[in-house]
Image (cartoon, rainbow, N blue to C red; front, side):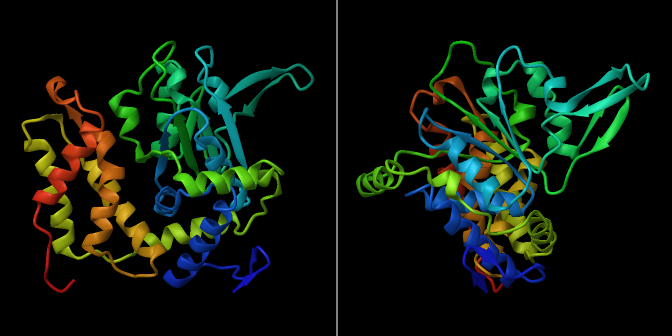
Amino acid sequence: MIMEGIRAIMVINSVSDVREMAACIGDNIKKVIIGRDDTIEMVLAAMISGGHILLEDVPGSGKTMLAKALAKSIDGEFKRIQMTPDLLPADITGINFFNMKTSEFQFVRGPVFSNILIADEINRATPKTQAGLLEAMEERQVTVDGVTYQLKSPFLVIATENPIDTQGVFPLPEAQIDRFAVKLSMKYPDHQAMIDIMKTHMTKDVLMELEPVAVKSDISDAMEIVKNIRIADELVEYVVNIVEKTREDSRIILGISQRGALALISAARGLAAIAGREYVLPDDIKRAAPYVCVHRIILKNSERIKENAELEVMEQIIDSVPVPTEEL
């Protein structure tokens, strides 16, 4: 039951509850982000399956606004870091400083100690600082001066980057990219959506007026339910076949890792939960695959000439793998 922007359900204990929660959060985000329904759905699928998100697109396309709208919708603590070349790892994780009053070292927590961390223009930070996020993203913990600190739950990194900038940027290394469950592009809205955006945003600050429709414990509960979404053995093999095809394709230098295969299963489970199903369908895998796989493959130089070459190759691979047709 939905009550004037605040969900009446306090505990998420079934797939139908997850579906209702996701629909409510999605509708809330759509008040701010207009005409990007597919992107919003994949963001939600990644979030409830425990994956981190990389948003890549041109300036002014709404990447940061989408991240902020999501953070406000779940009423979790969120922090935003503007990534710059002079940013240090300690600026993200936190530091120990000597307190003169107590004559003791005191740990000051950095912005990584939040539920949603927005890393704006992540490719402007140096590799050393980018690496500072690795442990947090993978292990949900950070280590400072030999002491390990657990992060909050849920913890989600939403990083944005601008693909057209080439000056003063540091491309993300493969190890860092692989830790993002999905890579999404906002894309330009269509004509009518553009008109609706102008009408919505030119008279008021919609983001400031956005109210939470879920709480952070809902997301943690949803994650536990999504982990138990059933996926048939035939579909696990289907995922493995897709992954192996990327490793065998002569156009690809680097195929998809085991982490990528697990991320594909998780994202498919997230889509199934959003649809209110307790089981994964082949269509869930096919829908999630481009978002999960494209940023994980590296093409030969001769194959990178065309725009969106990685996406085209990935779509051809997906189409070439037989889809299980037995009762799942």
